Image (tube, rainbow, N blue to C red):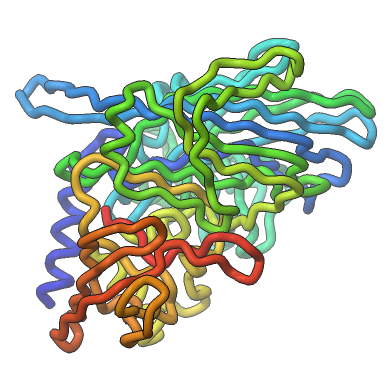
Length: 441
């Protein structure tokens, strides 16, 4: 009962926090909005994403409350090829997700400032951006309305009614204030549940020609309530739905102030090839291949060829499995079957491709990722001492030596404590990183 009370208290507190960075920032490259299935002719030939971290800024509100916000600038270029006829394609990227700690959308559902953080353009000029929502379609949300009547309320992107459980893209989650509501509807509840808000745009493709899409975003990092620990989550959706894997790509993390490297206490590419540290890293330029872009003194780089990212749902299960007490929540769902009837078990937190960065103060408490737990060793590459349980343990990191960490383990189910070494970034059979722990936020 004490744990439930604490969880309810945290949810209540989160409702009073209106800014964008709390426990819900997410960004990615463009993903296809499918009208029907995958696109048969459009493929991503190449991509480069530059994530530049900036020092925190302190904002003083009218009531004297100080808020520390950390931002990143994300600049990217995506080269698409079209092997078919001329067409127009809707693309999107997630702009914010709801969590149990932050049940309203970061920045507000209809905050115009949200759109101002993004720019997308091609060689022909800047593209208009629009906001929408995505959820799994639940026909019960219509209540007694027909699909045609319900569509006039939610303004779906596509005229055809989705099948139950299919992705549902719609533009209105609440009716404007003062609008008469149909019987059974209330402005206290959304017209349809949404897992994330998205930014989308339309790109024109000429028959048989390439198209270069540029993207820029001012990203606000997620933070804990004390604004000490910051995180950035960048999922790779960019191969999903297209005609082929990403031909070549790289995601590079750089900093505007060298001291920020000292503040970074965790980084990983989940379900991605291992990264490398590169000195004198030079940005690419897809429009002028004989011209090299800006050079950075140091960069953390994920590079890949013919890579098909593993996609996931756009929700907190996938990108923030380590939120506060959520390890216990996930554990109880899996171990004791407390999932709601008709819902699927959550995916492994390492089952989709995304980059996770953490910096600032903190970095001591971690969440065990694999549902089956993980082995504890007496030394790096040493003898196994036992296994650390998923969900019922917290991990305190004492020391990190390359890809290994010395940790202490507290199991609050039986009160035992242990100490040993764990491997941080083991590779799966597919050669992709499957991290064993993630920093709690």
